[in-house]
Length: 384
Image (cartoon, rainbow, N blue to C red):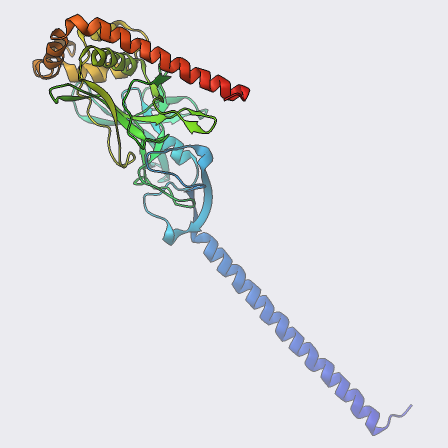
């Protein structure tokens, strides 16, 4: 059937319109594909510019122990990552806490394979060679993630995980770095026990998780550090902190030395056993212990199988001289005369009342402990 010019023009306009629509649609689709491709490239570029780091999930205070459950792994831009951060995964934190029985810390080194040229990260310990007295790096490896061995001898090496503490106050989402944390000297060894003391004079604003030194002050003004850099916990009964009692985790050696200082503080009228608080426990190193226990306590520490050898060695290093074979022999006279002589003189001047003072002091301690225990039991039963 013949078409009139109007119909022909309408059909042509429709076809032209469809063609234009298809061209425009094709152009839009092509543009969208290009934009999608560019977006994918940008995302890939951004993703390549990100790395995983360890960040805190909560606020922490200076001196607070950082545990694995307080840390998360997130991706951040490489440019925002500090050079000394714990990157990749939580295993870096685990490795950073490791040290051997001698106190040598575990480090990591990038080692290049001489044959393949491949670079791998290896664990190592720096030890002092007993013959040359020169430092020597020894690589260690693990097969099961638990036991470690020297690569050069296949000898098993016992590693201990040291608590990791914050040097400064940090907020949640802070990237952890090696300059923000430090290894604690309060290592949980087999002889550590939670000890309770109520005869120590405490600072008026002492709080749980703060760090203290315990000192013995003599009547003539001399002052000795008995125990240093210990984290305290204050017993809380029904929402009320104890006024006089603290808990501390102490090893057997510290327990014996502190007990000696307690007894001597009872025997010497005018003496004081008191605690001083650290301002920034994460940044401040433990104070050097200056108190020397009595010969009877030193003999007990020497023979007590519960005292960890590392603690004994630290004590002998401070108090005794070494002979050529490396054995601790004679007492260091400067330490003995500077510390024990004043204490012994104060004890000798008060022999008549010393026994009575000890008896009274111990009875008071027992009474305070019983009273605290009764408050605790009453709180459990709801009668407090």
